[in-house]
Image 1: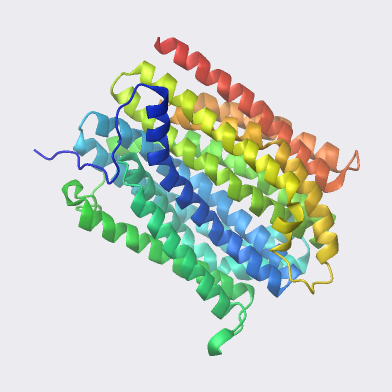
Image 2: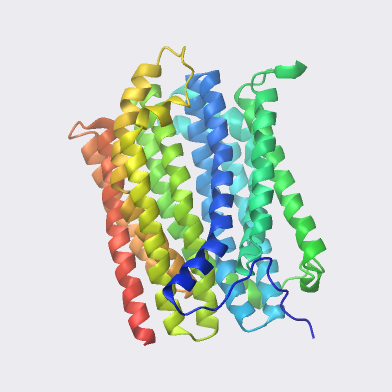
Length: 459
């Protein structure tokens, strides 16, 4: 009989608080590193295009936002794979691990087939949303190339969830780091035309990102085939398993909408900042990239919480679930406090890395960006709380009520408050970001209360 393959990191089943912390860090730190490397690909694009031109940077902000919105929406099915694999692994059920992972790839591929045409139609969509025509055209050029990377990007997300749930997290980290290094080199060659390569500007950044995404997917596939042959993950992949398909779909679509609600909150803020002009949009894009980097710390810890909660549920271990959730929340809170100190202490240093010293708009972008980073510091704590609560609830396979909470908090409260503060009340970009803090704060409180109620029910 096939058995579960042991992970590449030792994962004990501790009950003491220090042991929980060690286990969370062993599992979570490679995931944090992987997420940081992944978001750094977009960060590198923004930095290098910022050196190339402000308009190209603004277009990359909109293009990356559109791509990321659809990626994170479709990733709901990949995220559903994680707790399902974790629970099946806790029961030594290899067949179920294989079934849900395969169907996660199926659902993700179907979503990509529907979403890629939207990305390829970016220019008319952005024109209809009131963006500047030149920015919309550049964004259309960017997504006309990089948009094709959505399918392999979703495949990467499914395989990352599969590997993370089995606690094979080091390969996830190293593959992402390799992609980041390649992206830097390709951007340098293709954006600026170095070493005899054509100067392609924003199109060069799109080509680089597409190549990196395809390579990352190939590395993941080869690794799974070579190192985890007992799962036969890709054997007869073309054969449907409608029962497992339904399980992944039912758990994944609320996660997708929850992801969309949160990422859509920031996407809507980008569109509102675009109404203020290219310079505020560029400042917003830089501040958003910086805050996205710090958010990856909490996202990695949230993924670790999902895996460990899934394992605890699979073993019917309520005490392990509660104590582990408390420890991961403390770790996330500590990271958030450090982030606030950095945002308020050295904002010019962080923002200045994205801009050429000779750029005529540099001073104006920095002035706006400092205020936006101060606002971002306000929602670090509540943002950390809500993503950790979501991670634990997903490990418990509780996704529909959190989806409703997210939709109401982000769109029923956050977006209206952002608009009112930013435009009718005249606070501009700072008002938009303060509205984001309000929406995230409501979500953080409500999701944390939801977990407390669910945890008490297990006692």
